[in-house]
Length: 319
Image (cartoon, rainbow, N blue to C red; front, side, top):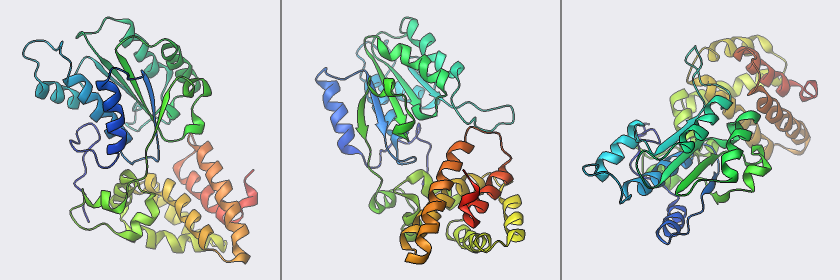
């Protein structure tokens, strides 16, 4: 199974979310576009792609583009990140080439620098933040300063995976757009083969998670993970240890594991019999809380994975 997968900033076709696009397009055309928007929904369903698509519509339609700067040239510059009226803020890479756990205040301050200067090209400017719930506290406060009094002809598109992680003061200054999970029909639009309904049941309508699971091995990875979870449940930790050490070194399977283990437990909780349900409900609560906290720690990858399986064995060990 393969997907014709493209990164959000180069993908030319928006899959789903046409009703949301029509809403913003109508507001822009009528001159009633609010400056700040929260794009809220499950990770990997196309919110970043949507932000690039709408930014492209605004910036290519600018009547003040210099002579010779056609729509095609503007679009190409947006794709390669060189169009001067577009700024994208996201997590930086560390010295090891790995993505940081959060967006730092240094990244957020680029917004202030960008908007305190005159526009390189007269007309609209667009700021995309991917994602606003990944700003650390100092970065969120830095962004808030500019959201309180946004400049004219500027639109903020703030990708948001978890609304509860966003400062209330930022939420109060933004209009909210809710994005629905993608359907199997949506996923089939960009798949070279029919999508696996079993895989779809794990990814909560997310193209990004579907692609992540495919790269990690798809059903094969799930079939390997399931007996390891069973072993952990029985306290048989030797195969669990070996599995964790192997997967922690794999740049495709490790990030997939971090969300797949949660979804596996969630599905198991829904289908558990009355004798087992209380255990799995507690595992779900403790596992979700642990993985949320682990995002801002510097725990070893193997240790993070082992902790997940220890919670499955006995959720009362985590408090």
